[in-house]
Amino acid sequence: MIKAIFFDLFFTLVYPCYLDENEYNVIGISSSEWEKYAENRMLYNERAKGKIKTEREIIDKIVNSMPYILTDEQKQSILQKREERMKRALLTVDNKIIEILGRIHVRGVKTGLISNADIIDIKYWNESPLCELFDSVIFSCDVGMLKPETGIYQLAMKTLNVKPEESIFVGDGGSNELCGAQNAGMKTIFTEYLDCKTVNQKEKINKYADYHINSFDEILKYID
Image (cartoon, rainbow, N blue to C red; front, side, top):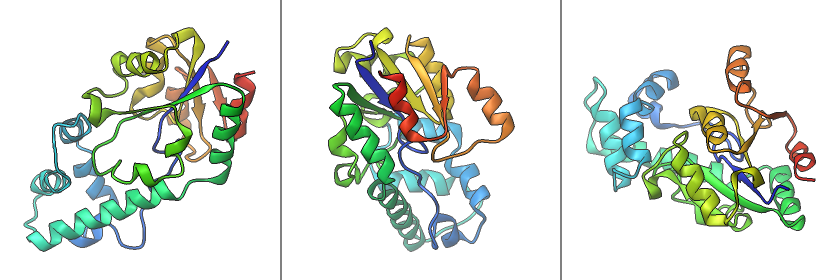
């Protein structure tokens, strides 16, 4: 019997799409070049594990790794645009997702969040309509662990007092999260409701997916 469903956040429940004006526009580079530096594994792990304590320091670390010299004003503008993008993602949630999370609760199943995120990513979490729909929230920057580390899933299950065989993890497959969930003993659902993957990406992710969904309401059939 399933007693808890755990969800990834970005690209599973919210989509942090770029806006009309974004971080990379301040520098005059492409989004792909910006991502190359912003998602550098070493820098990402540092901030997503909570080792960087201020929003501005996160931006400083990213831009200082680039071959460009930026003014203090430009750095502040990048921070503002990144915060605006994440705020919009957290506050603009698909209605079907909100509906299904509510229906899960009605069925007596607990909900948990397990997200790799830094302090900028989660700054507006408490204002999100998602906030009140979760019984437990685990952000990597708060606990010093990242998916797919087994420990972060174990902590989430311990928080809700459920066993692995009573748990399902739902995610888009980023950060090898479904593999991590399976290693922790959970069943896994690969969702493409918000973000459709390429054929090659699907092939890799499906290796660690017990189930696959394209519509968010399909989750309900796995908790009956």
